[in-house]
Structures are given as structure tokens and as C-alpha cells.
Length: 255
Ligand code: SAH
Image (tube, rainbow, N blue to C red):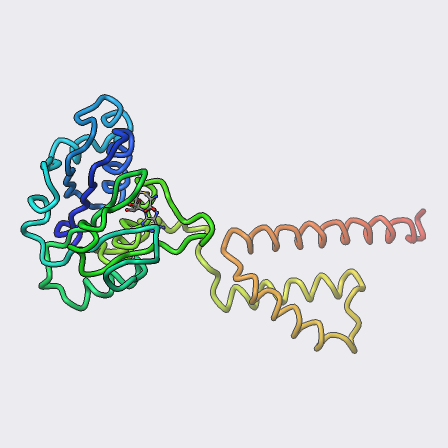
């Protein structure tokens, strides 16, 4: 679907915004860009701001007028920072993705972005089936042009990206969760050390057992974390044994 959605920038005055738009599109997997009567284009500033998305600029369609740019589109959507006096229904970017999902035959889709100073003209707004308003501070609602493109393209990516949204993360063996037998071994180890150090009194045993079980369960302990905890418990046991050996030696009749 992302390849059927065209971003249309109308009468853009700053070439940097054209480059930043290309970059915003490419990171979200969109590729179709149309430029309607840009004030200064091609431009070194646009190329620079595009970073490694210059292929989007190279493939961009440049037209004299908006009608030519949207001639093949079946769904035309305008974006606007203004909410008053719009001729069509106002929707959020998320609602836009739902509308596209519900009517996949209405493609290609064109999403129009206005000029930096004054936005889309009334004539341009009248060509649109819907108007997208990016929810913003009502007292300061106008985003930078390329930022507005970025946010809309992000919503489109969430809705239409193929495959997983997150890259696959390799599972590190030591970060694998422990199984129940390992859990029981660890819990028993804790209780043993608590008994050995005199912390655990027989009449509290059940209570501590239940709470410790709950605490360790909440921690979702991994293999490496279990190794740390059990290593620590072993060192406590070792120190206890050493202390009691010294005490025993002191008490022995040969001393
Ligand atoms: N002063 C202009 C704002 C132009 S900003 C106005 O009142 O409309 C340039 C373009 O960025 C806008 O035409 C629109 O396409 C987009 N844009 C900026 N803020 C937006 C918002 N909150 N919602 C939707 N589009 C927005």
C-alpha cells in the first residue's frame, strides 16, 4: 500500500523542506513524491537535507499545477493546521489510515501539503475528500512542513508496513528466562541461606517462602541473573562456613 500513496508538496518555498520531506518519506518506506511548482528546485540544499534519500528526489514528479499531479489519484486528502472553514470532513492521521484500509480500491492516494507561510489555498482544499489535522496545541498548531510529512508517514507505516514493525532481536542465551525447576532451585537456595544465617525463623518460613516466590516471579529472572544470585548465595554460604570453622577451631580442646 505504501507505494500507492503519493506525497504532494504544493508551492514549497524552502528547498530544505523538500529534501527533509524526501528523507521523512524514505525512513517510513514511502517513495512517491510530487512537487507542484516549487519555488527553488532542484537545489543543493534539498539534496543536502535529503541525506541518503536522494533517490526519492531523483524520482520526484515536478508539475506546474496541482491538477496534473493528482490526475490519477482516487482519494485526495489535504493536510491543514487550520481547523476552521475547511470544506470537508476533518480527520486525524490515524483515521486516514483506517479510511484507506476500508477502501483499498481508492488508490492511488494523494496527500497534499501546503506552502510554508499560508498552507493549502481554498482552491486546493476544495479538491480534497478529507482534511487531516495532526492533533497539536490549539494555540500553536502549525508544524514545520517536513515534520508534518514525517508524522503522517509514520502513521502510514504503522498501518501498512509489511512484516514486523520491530526489527528481529537475536535472543542471547543468557537472557533466556529460567524454567520452573531452576526457579525452585534458586528459591530453595535463598531459603537455605536464610536458615543458615539465622534470618529465617521456623514460624516465618511459610510467609517468607510465599513472598520470595512472588518477588522472584515478578522479576522474571533470566539465566544470567539467576547465575548472579546463586553465585552470591554460594559466597554467603562460603563465608558462613569459614566463620563457623574458625569458631570451631577456637573452641577445640587442643587450643
Ligand atoms: N500557516 C499555515 C501552516 C503552513 S505549515 C496554515 O495556517 O495552514 C505547512 C504545511 O504543513 C501545511 O499546509 C500542512 O500541509 C502541514 N501542517 C502543518 N501543521 C499541520 C497540522 N497540525 N496538521 C496537519 N498538517 C499540518
